[in-house]
Length: 130
Image (tube, rainbow, N blue to C red):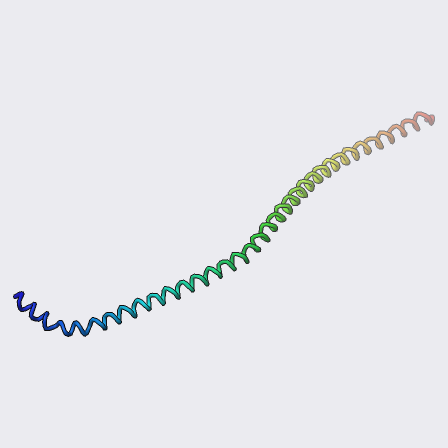
């Protein structure tokens, strides 16, 4: 059996010899296309890196503005908080003043009433009743 296989392989050697240059050409073009693809990918990666650097520069300005606005917003929030506290304090003071005014009004009414009673008593005592 082995001799037959070797005889058949010996007969195929000239055909294989013709296929070797074709295989060599195929592998050479495949390697060349892979190198071309690799070069294209490297160029594309370089372009992406450049775009990313431009994008980073553009975003750095936006980040600075965002930080400035965050600082301003914090200051405004603090001012609003102080204003709210001041408004609440003023409302409490106004409420206390209203209570004092009500109390003063009661005292004035009571004082006027007492003065009227005293005046009537003085007139009654001064004028003789006939």
